[in-house]
Amino acid sequence: MARGAAQAQRKRAQAAQPKRKQKAAPSWEDQLFFSRLRRHAKIIYVLLAVVFAAGFVVLGVGSGSTGIGDVLNTLFRGGSSSSLSSKIKDDLKKINAHPRNTAPYLDLATLYQQKGDTASQIQTLESAVTVSPKNVDVLSQLASVYRAQAASAQTSFNDAETALAANDATPPGLFNVNSTLVGQAFTADPLSQALKTKATDEYSKLGTAFTKAEQGYQRLATAARGTSQESTAELQLASVARDAFALFTRQVSHAQIAIAAYQRYLKLEPNGVQANLARQTIAQLQAFLPKSHR
Picture 1 (cartoon, rainbow, N blue to C red):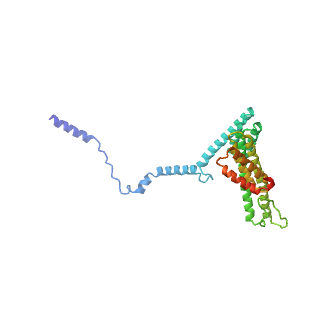
Picture 2: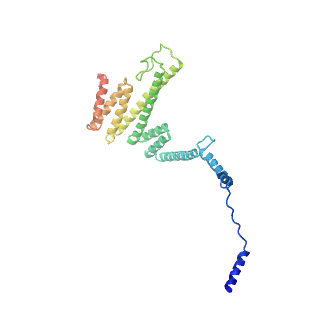
Picture 3: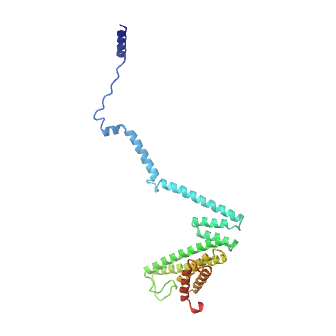
């Protein structure tokens, strides 16, 4: 009887509890893709708005820039430029404090080279030569700068000469690398005159540039006498003088400088790597010289 009473009590308790409402199965309309999309539309719209906004910022749409790339480039370039200027100031202070110490001059010249300021680079190295006339490192760097300028001047002249020939402004043989403009008997149009003037100016600059390069290596070769760097300096001098003679064949002084430098190199290294080339070049240059200059 007790067990039956307990069961009856449990049934009454269960009957007293409210019945849970069963969740209705989703209708066929609710299961459609676009119906579900509408239910989450607000969230999707917010996400799309964030994505588009980020795209405008990162890609720089409508701003005339390339977006975050420009910002990063500006930051890095600005930092690099600021760092370079700071280093230049530091080297200038060191030079003012110890003007006879060539190390800051060399470092400063390198910084100017990185900055693209060739004029300041040359001025710095020339100042270093003033305080240390026989410093091989300084003279070597300075001669290299002058040689690079000569190469650049040669390119500029070649371009000017090509433009002149393309315009067909000058009769054949009127202008070449070994002479200035002649033949005043004909009248040219303004464009032709401008091209001739340009070619003449570039030719003049070319001669000046090669003269400076040649003088730079002469100073280097002189300072390097008796050192392990002398043979290399003589080869460099011979090379620039040979190129100068090829451009200005009427100036025999270039050939004489090249021959003397090659001969000095052969005396230092008769069996050197460049020995055979030096002997061949000497023979070629001497063939162009008048007998009185051999």
